[in-house]
Length: 286
Image (cartoon, rainbow, N blue to C red):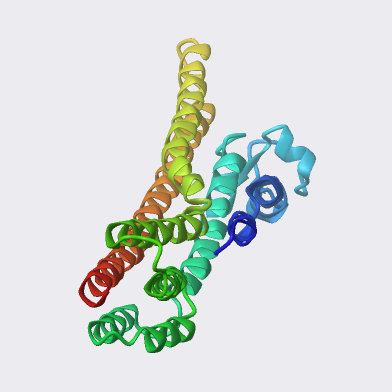
């Protein structure tokens, strides 16, 4: 493979998948919209019965805290300004989890990868390189792409009389490593987002928890001998809502990240397994 083809493939891998710089601001805007207009819908609240003259519910009443939650969505809304951030984090995790699932599914190619590995190794043991290349074309995945590049180099080296056997082995190994390097960016792209949110979501939730507890203790101390029970309960509720959202988001992100990491490691192992077979076949027959 020439240099220009390598460069084109590198660019293609970098452009594959969603662009975080474009998608994340949009998802944050969606999270804020959900917080304001879905969770903050007047239908999720009821008027404080202790207040007179409040016959209907409006967004202005929400701003003045003259309403009480009338359901779970209203309770989440009362979690404060950290809630839309955590909602955005959860949406980002879900969107990029779907994106990674589609990309890795495509990278796995058609058919069973284990069967593909067995078939290619069987063909290499019989020195049927052309048939193995056909198997790679049918597989249409990252494993097939890497193996095909290795087999193409394999065929070229069999007709090269200018290199020693050791030099040919080095060139074959280098070709496989370069092909693997071209495929890995596509597999690992955006994985850092899931890893980061798995940690950051907990820290942001902790900030919301601290803010809620500050409000609770302020309500406890500002009332003198009679604490404001309503303000105290709102502060505690805000702290717990942020904690729940943060832990939930972090748990989902970590689980998804570990799942996709295991799939990437599995594909990498299959590539290494066939690469070893290619090298052994070349050493045996050439």
